[in-house]
Image 1 (spheres, one colour):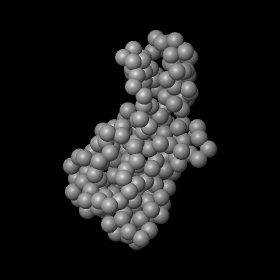
Image 2 (cartoon, rainbow, N blue to C red):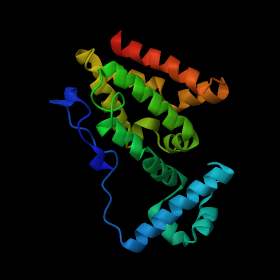
Image 3 (cartoon, rainbow, N blue to C red):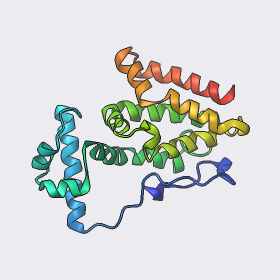
Image 4 (cartoon, rainbow, N blue to C red):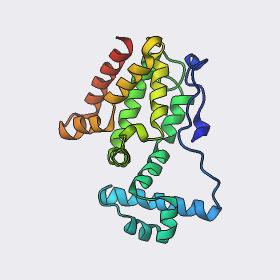
Length: 212
């Protein structure tokens, strides 16, 4: 996914370059690529049927019609499956953030882009909440250990820098805390907030952090 790295806005000039969205994978043989695709497609089908909690590696190998050795060579556990699925599902959003039309893409003021990012990010997390929670629970430092986290945080930092260049990093971290998967789970599932209402509230809070 590193090919999606590109200019976020004119304000990125002179800033730190974007980190790659994922590690660069070694080239795979055609049959290995087909097997990986079969596993991910089967995982998506199973999750739609039984949810993330019901997904097992044994059932996945059978559904994908691959041997367990093939499965474990590509993915060591369910968290690895979840990370790969999330990588697939976020590609278009990343492309729109970096190269798409405003306000999500370059060309709009920072706070407008930030509000558009909040909407897109919350929708992405809510659509894949169990996958995100699984990947974050699989590592000691939670979301900070996810390879995409520096990309999200740096994107927000660049946008906040238009308002507060002196402490943009700190404010970006605060914004990402507001948008954490655990926090969104609390609001959406446990407190029962509607997605549109929650998004509007979160946009106000995030823009307030950026401007305040």
